[in-house]
Image (cartoon, rainbow, N blue to C red; front, side, top):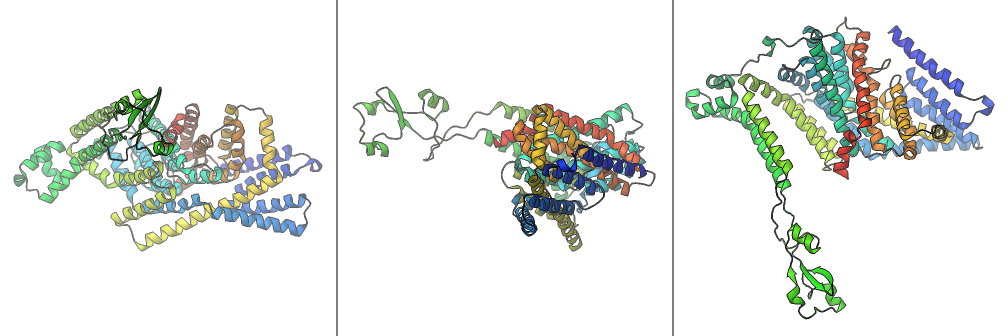
Length: 639
């Protein structure tokens, strides 16, 4: 700990010395310089351990009072205006509808955490990925990604995986550094992958749609998790001593009695099921057991048929158009249902010319015919049916890929793999279904983030009840922790709002804007500079402080450099992953150290996190070079 303390104090000393050097003499100091001094003092106070929210609030009120006094106002009036500013800012936070979803998502996370799904999820994924190099570490990362997505609570995921996965990996001969790095990096994925509380906080701070942020962060989150898994697989392949393969004896799964009956007929699940169905009397299997086995084995096929049928209905949905007529008059063209009966024609006293009735021809509803006559398609109001659209090529490609995957699935589905599949059905799929329902409702516009969060909370109740973990103690503890976390976030918003107002009153924002614009930076250089600053801020500060303190400084500059606030938010979200993996704060390391065996040192955990921190930087570069990774989905869904 001594080295970490020295490192932290050296950073604080660098901030203080740098501020003193950059500041002009007292006689030349302006209000803008006081704003920069306030910013430096806040950072140092937070690093010394003062509560962030109340530090922001106190500093903001003190310096706001200085700002009002410097404007020539009397002491009484300055105090009144400062108190009024505090009340106004607190009220604006209270009326922010976006923040309502935070306690609901947090409550969902705590309920899911207490449903004890993580142990079953980790064990089933470990067995399912047994043939993959570094299977334990890969299963840890996948479990962390799924569980972090459902909870979004970094401390809970890292702590639980530290209790569950770390002893298993160390017992299997895994490197301490690789094990610690996989757990801490995987546990932090909940910061980025929706539904993320951090994205809600950024959206409320920057005025960006949380729905678009969720859609934009989806693929960057998957990309980062994939890079983590790829790194672990490569390390395990090159240096198997760091991640030994799973022993054959550990891969065996004991068959349940119904599966043993099926195994007597065939080692593959589907032929065994068909044989038992053919001669059920000889198999001594009850109808209830047979039906259960049938639904488990045939269930994926039924699900595939339902999904493809729904996709077929959407892809070939007919376009209903009205039956219109075409009338040519003096070289002009008009379309009408009945020119004589047209209200407009009757109102204008227009009569059909002689022979016009013969020239009026019904127009076919087909798109090609409509285009050839220049008449646009108009939705029908009389129920005129149109032919179904032709099946698009992408549907046949999807169908072919699905059939191929299904054939391989049933070919390799042995009785032992069937038991692993059952374990996944009891752990992975319920959690995945809850995540997909919540995210799908948000991304596809079926519900607002707040409504989807309420749905997720209900789903958390249902999961806890289904796994017989729902009782009054669990509910009380979840409500208490939710209130504690939500209060912290809301007070942070109040404090940051007061701080930002004081910073603007002093002219600190204007001073920074002039300095940045005076550098003559291009758009690329500005993005690089801003992300480097955020990356460095991740060393002494957590993501909450970075967003509520520094985002209000960066956001006004985006207009000048023509940077989309949505894209900037995705860069920030990916960059802020480093806040939990960067010493000396690196809260994920301290969470893991609190539950790790005594021989696992903090320095080993820090060393294990460094490669994953480098992967985060690589992912940030990839997102910057290929913005479509984050911007494609929002542009498709909300264009």
